Image (cartoon, rainbow, N blue to C red; front, side):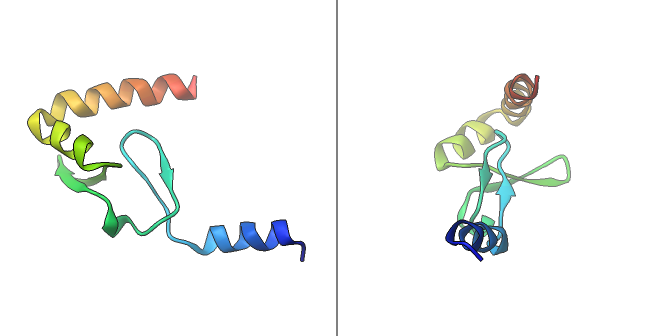
Length: 73
């Protein structure tokens, strides 16, 4: 197995999650801010995003869904 294949295999073994903004993190989600929103746990990438989410959850989610959709187009 090549060094590149070994690194990729190790990366796939690590836990990963997707934050609300669409960023993929290869890390344990317990170390990132989380919040409940409409019965679901959402993950955020920073404490700043958590503060913005908590100030107006509906607006924050709507804004991030729109930006996430634009990335997919």
